[in-house]
Image: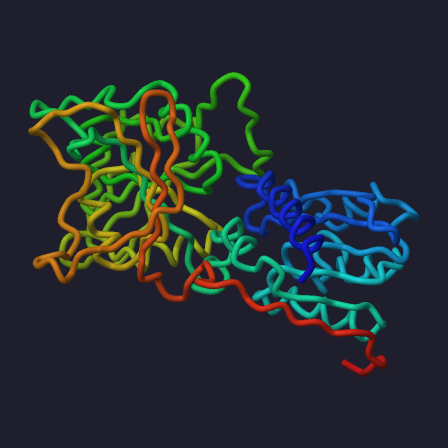
Length: 388
């Protein structure tokens, strides 16, 4: 792995990130094409499901300069014909001599592009900046590897951990800048999940409302609103049923569902304390939901943590103190200090007057969406063509 490989793959990863929120149920992918002299000839990223893949976009920009050059791709070029053709074939047709890959494709339907390229004499190097590339694609990799959506728990609180005052009021603890960032975070997810307690107390809309100047991802469908409501208590007048975005209400299989909820309800197994969250995530996975954002309330967040179903925590801390009132997190299965949920900081960023924290479990959920250490690069030169 050369310094040039690191430079260009890091650029490809940055390009891939531009597709966040727009590509589900596909991955985000970035690509950089160099001409034979090592100059950048083309760049591209996968912007929306059904649209051209990153390699195709970059090859179009590169034109004839791609022949004999190098392609840097964050995910192994696909070897699958779906709504678009295989990217491995596009690279071969363009005459690219070397392909540098960050992460092998774990999807058996699309994997195999690297092998095809090698069989046709292309040099393929794999594992370059794998950990960084997995980070930007963590949601999709979890979706494929674990067979469930990637789960982010978001909370807003004072620095003493309170999400509401003693009388229940909570608007607004954080600043307009923080709230705008939350809507950007929502836009990058496929579903926003809240518990019935939050719906009854706050009557949230759970929609994406981006501020001026913040571009919306070119989503194929609006972000799905999900209410975890074991007893089917969501009122007919609740704003989550206003038709502004699709809504799913997860009710217990033995609940009596009123007529106004029937079009939205999905019945799931009841467990002590409410709905089986594993079954909920399986249902969302079947609906091609790649990533979910848990927004409320503390009891629901605690339940997801107890089940080991939180992949990322995003907290917005306001420089304020309440001293009493609701905590941001409810019971999370910790009865003694040895059972504490340990996290690692991934990002600490000021947002207006507030502080944004991004954290991940120190003991990753299984299977891990992010490699703990970079995968050592492996290189393969030209090989004789073989029958597949």
